[in-house]
Length: 125
Image (cartoon, rainbow, N blue to C red; front, side):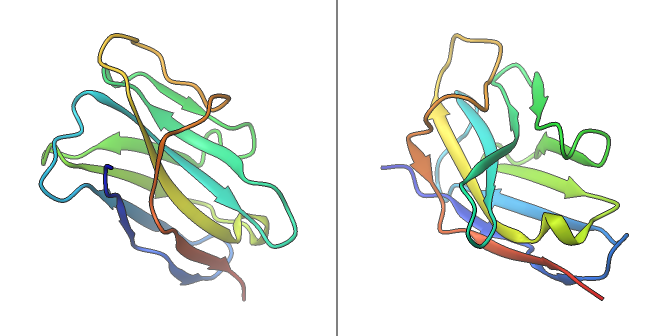
């Protein structure tokens, strides 16, 4: 089982920024599609963004133009840069991964096998 550890969540004012990190201790993520999902209180989990093994990216409609997903220079890390945060971005954010060495495109509409424990993001004044 792949372990994923999220960090970087917290409390931020509307319009502010946060950068979430996802690390897989001791494992390279080169052959995994990496994604971020979030779940707000009382709502279903929703795909935020994903990045494929070829660094092709995909974003949910609500975050396009504000969030950026990337892979770190350390091959076991991925990031989600969140700018222009809104109160409706408040949620628990989960890092996810799927083994997929051949597909160049990731999707937010598939089931992901590996999930982190989540990190809380709260956007409030």
